[in-house]
Length: 460
Ligand code: SF4
Image (cartoon, rainbow, N blue to C red; front, side, top):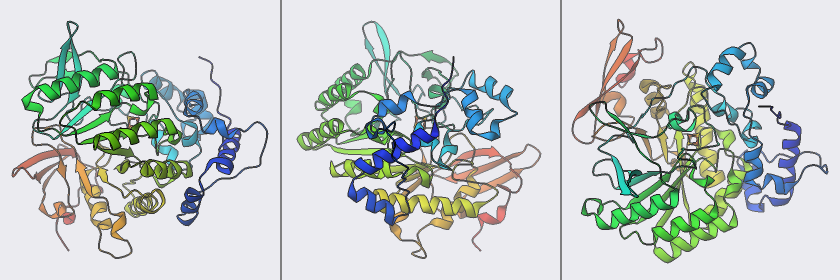
């Protein structure tokens, strides 16, 4: 397919036109106070603020082809054959706003050869998948790990696919979003079953029906709507979804898991969507929150600050989730740089966007080993020295595809975990204290100089 290389100069001017006319005064002053760029550019007739305000305009101008990537990112020059081979299976997608972020764009540059695990945290396990029988078919409705308070609803974005245009190279659901694989039900004995994906509105209607009717679901109260990217659904579909959710008897908290705010589509949160959500919260008393994905200080853009303030004014609590990713916010050979980057991200979120970092997540694709990640966590842990506790994330999750559930790591974990280093096998094996009262096993490749220093496991 013929490509149309993005015109970065036009993007900059279009962005500047939006800044001149649509950035709110409060967002502007927050940005200036917090070192967040409010870019300007010479005014020219071909740059229209309304284009930048349209998320559909952004979607249509994504970078999607190898030759455009090579033209803009010299590190791919000379690797075209490997790049073409990778892109035969991997769906490349870089949004215009992300192309303009000097360092933040690295989150979207494909890591050639990276193969995401099929089900890194067990959302497809047979004991966790909630299905419904309708119209003589078995449909995926949600995932609820045994006894969890939360229903996680992975929603399709059309044609039964889990769709996300944001295009993180290390997508935690990359098997589906980037490699086009369907969601499946996986049994402990290795059997794998296909499952149908309903249209999102039917999915929510059927889930609410089952949730209200089945005693086993009565103690779940939290609903996390996820994708792909749920904000790609139109406002008309969101209106229908919220009508169904008004009937959910046990619902107390609605969360939307989205990358749109900080990862390239902040203008998706338009007036019509905010009104829908605000009316839902006001009428039902259900708390409305967004789990917002962000990884680098560059991604706290002026547009994102503007949208974040509007969301919060509409009563939506923002919960930034920060995956630790190699080459994006963690450099294993330079933990000082990693620490500076994560601190600055936390400050821009807390004081610029007004949303305290909520959670760090250990890279589900295994790109950041546990030991240096815990060392970083220890370093930035709140001591009221050089940092206010406004910036400290509330938790650090190691998501595990197992019955005990996730572990929320503490810096004390450094000194409570047992690790054995098997140089022959090239593995590090950990035994982690788990809140369920047991120790759980965790294993990763041995990287000399990175996760083979047992002295980190002892307080000085
Ligand atoms: S925003 Fe989320 S679902 Fe979309 S590509 Fe990034 S990690 Fe995947």
